[in-house]
Image (cartoon, rainbow, N blue to C red; front, side, top):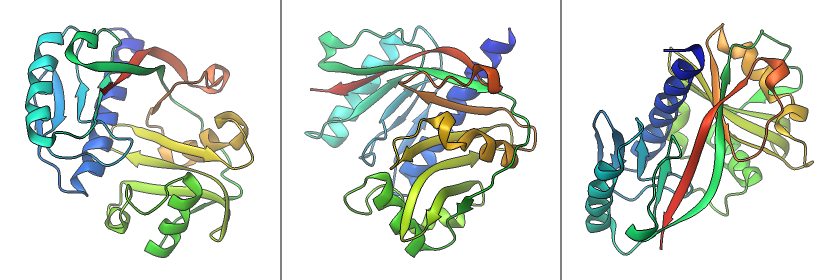
Length: 230
């Protein structure tokens, strides 16, 4: 297995662990096989009900999709196609975006101006700055999980940018970044802050946009797609 292939599989597993953790905070009913992870309960907004773990699992995903539909109908829900190789139009899904996984080892950098959320009240303000209309995605109980860190710049009452890191012990996943100043992921300096917390672990993420981080330690690992039920 090449380094890129190894990092890609770590990135997928890291993302499954993160999505599973967020879903569990809402009362999930998760199941996992060698080919896919699934939540047979309602996932919170922006989080999928199925994530593939391997390539070539079309038939398994179709079967899982049937189970999810039976469990949570008539809600819309999503599938993260981790390797970009599924075709789900005939199964009643619409492809809403494509992107890439990124990963690599980043040197520990300065995390100047970055702070971390320490209370449910600050998390409430963080989520509003991120763009949630109400506190529906990240409950305060997540702050009790030492693996999770909510980062921000600015003051709690005037947050300018932020992201989340999730330390699995094998990798550091980075997600949900935003900037109210319309700065890119690179311009925000989020990678440097994550590097300060990674302790040499690979940093992994995915994005629909080109992150432009190849010269900073992150390489493009492979494609992914997201499908939404119609």
